[in-house]
Image (cartoon, rainbow, N blue to C red; front, side, top):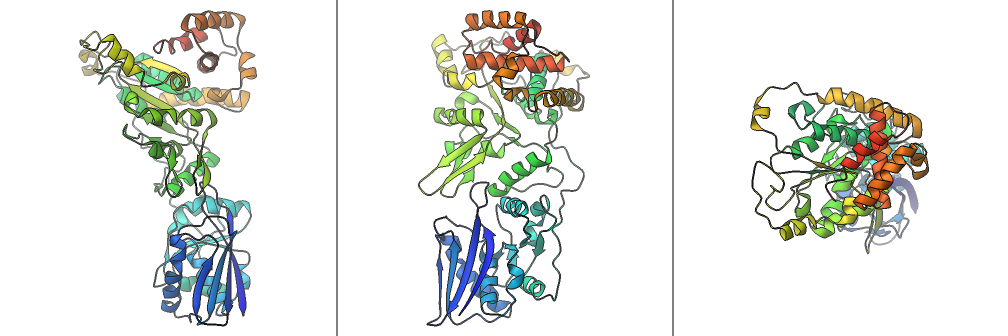
Length: 495
């Protein structure tokens, strides 16, 4: 009888709880059993493991083989445990030494010829292994994402490579990455947008403070153009934020292109997206669009066309920065701290209030159309900006508009000011700190406007946070009436 023990990690949201893999060989009729709440893909590994061991030239034990995946009450899925199970069988049958496996975490799906295939969602496990100060052994195809975190990770392309390394007869290379290449910019430039000075100003304020933004205007006024250029104004992510975002991409199965590691994501789901597509879920927990936009921008075009329940599902993540999914088989939490940018027409035909076109919508239809977006959701959107139709002559006339690089430099300077003062963006500024920055005349203006516009307490403090951002762009230490007045102008449309 012989037992071999190895360590790996499961995938649960963007977490990676440890899994102990025990392989026990005993006498009796040859069987291969697996215990420990293994799902279908894990149970099928017995056939992949058998084929890989035999085709790699090793002896498959003709004994009773029992594989235990602990803890037994945690769901385990995928092919990530194949390599660990195969090495456990070889170690238990004394075909390879067991001692080198004691301090290594093992991951990898096996092909029938013994080759190692990549594992989806491996980055959270590499992060957890690095935090535990344990080296990991992974497929060579996962080297890119692993190298973002740890230089101690070892990669292999075949079961034989791993066995030679364990026997001391060969070396495994460290994980290397293509992400060390110079950063590339894939977002369009703000210089492409002609005119729309008020909307450009609002976009700069939103980028500086991390504020949510709603763009309202007739078709063809440039709402989508403006929204798609917001990421170009945002500074690159810190390494910590970039790893968080990359972990979501890893779990989602999305490829991370070289040079874009610290570039903020931009997600624009179609208005027919379901609640699961937007928030996440499914039989196996998968991040939705709001989590894929973590640390970046979520753009919802044609906002009233989304299903009501889909939009209402945004309310909690907008406040908490996370989304918790509770199903019969699992309970997971995904990060979802995104900046929301939405766009909509002012009415069903799109031309209400447009002097260049006639609107044929009745007042009831306009009210019903706008009512598709609930008040509580609008309340959580800091800025409501009207985007007007531009004369065709303005669009034809060459104009020297500010580029994204120029505006981004102002955004970076104002963000640095806020970070040095309070350690976070103005959109997340706490109530007590915010109140201490407002001058008495600023309070008087806000009190009067709140009564006239029927602002809720949440809306009033969001106005103050936008005011703080406007003050930062003006290099002002306190919030004065002009700052509050401009911030209030971005709440007029919804009233």
